Length: 354
Image (cartoon, rainbow, N blue to C red):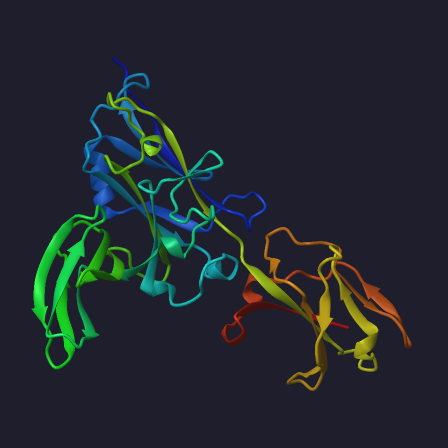
C-alpha cells in the first residue's frame, strides 16, 4: 500500500497593512514539545506562502496512520521579523516582552466563513482579548492583603483545577510561589478567594524580544465541532484556520519646513487629501533646532497606515508671491509613528521641505 502526506490543517497569517493581505512579519517554528508530538504522530510541519501547514501520513488521503487522541496539542511560536511590527499593527505598544498573544482552535469565532483562531468576536483581528502575561514555570506572586489568609487556586487551559491551598498573610502581604514545573506550556489562571487575579501563559521556551505569540492547535472535545480536523470516525476533515492583523491608524502630521521659502506665509499654505471628508488643520508654527520653521498640518481623523501609498495628497501655496503646488506628498513611514499617551493619540510625522 502506498502512503503519502496530505494536509491535516493549515494556518493563514494575514495582515491588512500589506497590499497582498499576507503577513510576512513572522518566523513560525514548532515548539520543542511540538516537534516531538509531530514525530510521534507521523506529522509533518511545513511553511506555505500564507503561513504554515501540518500534514499527515496516510493511505490515499484516508485516515492518518496514527490516531489523533484527546491529548494532542501542537504549539507554534511566532517570532516577529520586523522590529517595527507594532508601529503598523493595531495593537498596544506597551512592554511587548512582558506579554504574549495566544491564538488557538478552541476559540469559537467563525466569521464570514473564516475559522478564526482569535478570541474577540467583535472583531476579526488579533486584539488584547488574545493577550496574556508571559511567565516562567516558576515565579512568585505577591500582593497586599488585609485578610488573615487567602484561598489560592490555579486552573489550567481547560478550566480544570490543578492547585488549591489556603495561604496565610504575613504583615499585610500575601506572598507565595507559583510552581508549574513538570507541566506543559499553556494558559493558566490564578484565582484568589474565587476571583481571577492573573491570566498568564507559562513557559520557559518563548523568550526574547522577538517573541510575539503562540498558535495552539488542539484535538479534543473542547474544540468546536466545525474547528475539528478529524471526524467522529477518525477520518480527516481538513481545516484552514486564519489569524488576521489589523493595520494601525494614526493622525498624519505634515511638517512643512520653510527651508528655501522662508518668506512663505503659513496662512498661504494648505494640505489637501483625495477624500474631501478628510481635512488637514494648520497648527501653530514650530521652531526647529536648525533655526528653520515648520508649519504643521494634522489630519482631522486618524488615517490607516498601509504598504501601498495613498496618492493625490497635495501641498499648495496660494496668495502672496511665488505660488506653487506639490502633488503626491509622501505617506508616513512605519518608523515615524509617535504615540501621545497624554492625549490618547498616535501621530505619524512627515517632513516636507520647501
